[in-house]
Length: 93
Image (cartoon, rainbow, N blue to C red; front, side, top):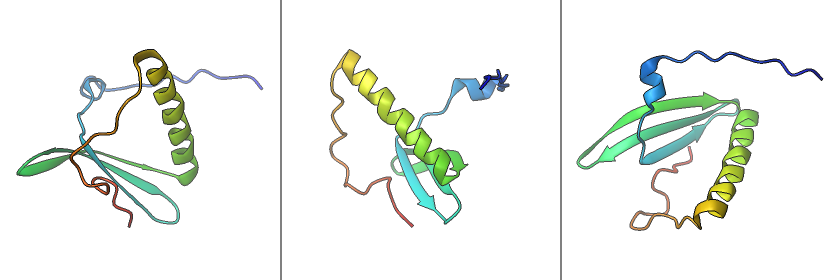
């Protein structure tokens, strides 16, 4: 199968990225919604919302798992953040 190149366009502001220190996941039967927040008490702001199909989410999870393994192989194990409740940022609906 021949691979085709796809050109991706991005606005300059999008290339800067956004910071997130919390994420909420919700879903319907057809799609997952990932909301990324920047929380700085006493308030927070939604910095990005990504909506994708379950199939694409599963591919993304695999890519993240592979990349964290590579990262830890190079820089050492990443310890989970402490001081937050276990459910913070991961609220199934």
